[in-house]
Image (cartoon, rainbow, N blue to C red; front, side, top):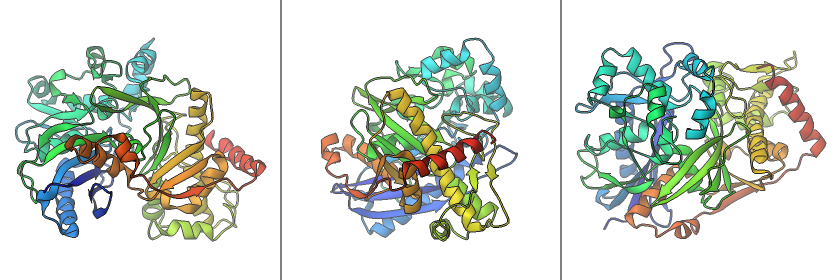
Length: 493
């Protein structure tokens, strides 16, 4: 009997595998980290083979932990760090170079040169819903084809395959047969037209990307391929759900109605708002993206992203050695009543929405002899919250109304101090679900829909359960002082 769903959540620092049943009983959750590489300032890379080996290892450990016959797995869903870009040999699967991670800034100069061309920003914005930025995949593909010997010629000859991480995993899970992505990931490349949901010939020309290297664009919930030759898995399991991590989290949070929104805290933080079948063009530097496509129905979203969230805590741990582990930051921050006037702008790889300042760098201000590591820990959590404030203020302007509820998920959402400070400055109620692994959950839902495990969105919505609500308790005047302090600091970053 095939009655379980496996979700592979392939993030920036590690791979998480979930095994669930129809009633969302979590039979297993396993996570393993893999290396990041920083060969030059502003460069961030992954090794695709290391990602695959990590995925295989994590699948095996999850099956062992669940103590199940893997033949019970009815479907596999994939969610992934979206803009990270890899290119490999179609036949051998051998990567031509390390993958360029979404955080990587090496193509910033090319982006700046495009912005100087009259009408280019408006044209790309209209077609893709995105801004010209090194964040997205298109410029990364161009860089690899330009800098790896013979790569461009081989790409034009059809010998090479480009993929974001979803595409790479389906390719490997299917025994190197399927070359496919879904609309949500394709919408993050700067190469897909939002209206046609197809690769746009004019955009391919602008970014010097040959069509021969691109995967097929599919929906977010359909059978793309079946497993073949995967260690620990039987052949023939349906690979049937796929969405970029933030879109998957929106789906996993059951944000099915236009106007509903969520914020996912991972390495970065991402706010998405469902806008239904309507493509909303932002006037406040938000991104317009495809949320998902199921059958013929397409759902769009507005998105604002901060490049740094959990990564700031990682930096405190690994870079400054202020804490020994990430979980320690909340108790350390709670040991002081406030940040002691310290403000941390976590622009460690530039600033994302709504600032979009590639040149911005991290800033710590307000230091005195009285400053302790506890103040720095608290300022770090506040800095993460302030970035969300900026995004939601811009999003509210686009919609012409204030958000009433924000659903939260991801690792840092379990930090009660961070959530309370966020609700205090936003003046918006925050709701945390019982299962904060909503990114993987969304992938599982999408895969299970295609496999018949769940009937429809209403069936899924019944499963969503809230854990805790956070409501503003800080006086409005005090919240405003915090915001004024932030806005003064962010201008200097």
